[in-house]
Image (cartoon, rainbow, N blue to C red; front, side, top):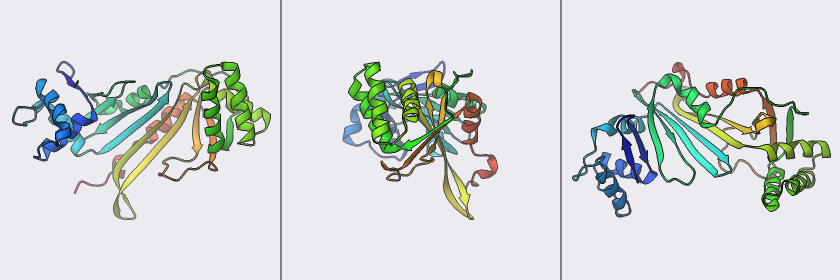
Length: 275
């Protein structure tokens, strides 16, 4: 169910509720499959009986309709993939957070100066020194990584078996020497999550208005530290990566991850002038 917390001007909304808003903003009647969602929104006062939108929705819907920058965060961990993000509007900035097993995301207004802090929170970026590790980078193929993840599932939680199967997969499919397959296997087994942040905005390219994209992909390997995925390079287009594509991971400090997150945001001069 959707909900609204007036004390913090925050909302819990699913994509189907946003679809209802889109229809109503355009002066349209929501399609039949959205009628239950419309009824839910009416029951909490966000939509009136004649389809009128509550004034408290104005900042959120205005930011969504005319975003200056859209930032999406995909975090894959034990509970699957969660989607978070930030909507930067002309006047308001909203962060939205997903939750495992929940349909709704929470939309909360934030101060625009805290965007990098919010992104760091979403990916659980933690300060501190990680344990020493014998390699600073690892290279193989995406096919080998897929084989390693399949081997991890086959182990069904047996840690010793998981280590053996992932090493074998990396050696057989990826052709890695024993020492390198051992190192990459350790990273996979110690992984808390892998995440990707993507920022999109309207800019200019060769004098023409164009969508601009920057992205960063990182493995959070707990005591083994943070590893930036340099290959395949982000942003990745659909169909661009296959089993033979190179995979390269480079270890970086938490401070450097913070800097890389900051670099995802455009400077003012990079934003196209409003038409």
